[in-house]
Image (cartoon, rainbow, N blue to C red; front, side, top):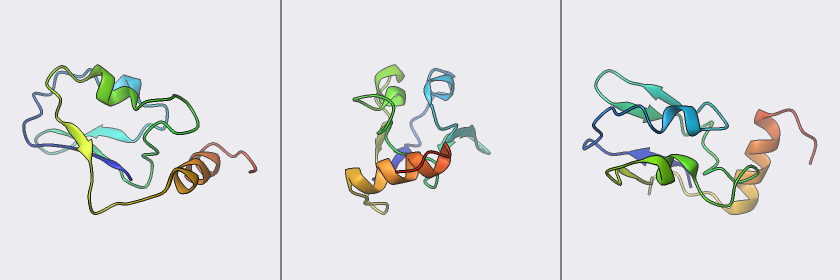
Length: 84
């Protein structure tokens, strides 16, 4: 499942550099996560690094983007040109 940044984001810039898939970007008002690039850090870390870095806990699973751990890992491989 991809992650989503809630409207309570304070634009602190903590999450953006933590993403190994460059899925986080500055939107019109707050940071946003590209669901096509978000793997919840599967393939890189044990936990989502943006969630760990967020000081106000405003990054949550996106209920509209449900993916299994295997699907997230496959997405990671595709993003980084690794054969599974």
